[in-house]
Length: 151
Image (cartoon, rainbow, N blue to C red):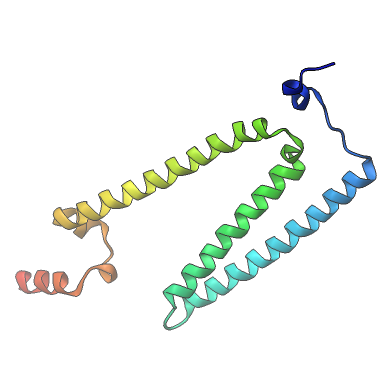
């Protein structure tokens, strides 16, 4: 008889049968296809909104958030079903998911820090602002001052 603490580790769960597994894979493939079609439709609507006269920033941001959520759902299904992580024990899942979450946090922190550095550099180093920021994104008062200073 095995010790109860090791029971979960030593029990190896197999698929009930091939037909059940194939049915699960087929359902997941259809679901991933539907999510992909929805993502493409959202991407097309974002593209058409950008080409319009006055694109709504809130609507575009909302669509981009929906695409991110759908992409995370697809990643979950791919890892769970096709990479068989859904059939693993909880500790094994946590050894993969926790470092992944830390990696995502690192990426977000580096992007945030880089954006902060860019904004501070544009604010305090006017030469850098002139060479890197397109004219249409510059505030109107700085371009007028430069024009009047050159004349």
